Image (cartoon, rainbow, N blue to C red):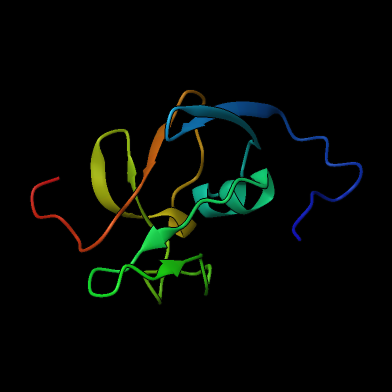
Length: 98
């Protein structure tokens, strides 16, 4: 559904999502990179376990919460990618102290 614009000449960076390497572009946010990757990555809600995708892409809805380099509860739509970044999909409720 999502694809990169033709002629996007930004430098590529490799990030790891749930241990799988994916290619992102310098300047992408984590959420944009996940959507462009084609991987079926999503957050699961705390109560029902329903699958969620990034929704607002501007930090309002919290449907894009991920763990980045061991720090949980990060809004992927607000964090730019960096080479070697480790991303885990957050499952369930927010975790205190992670």
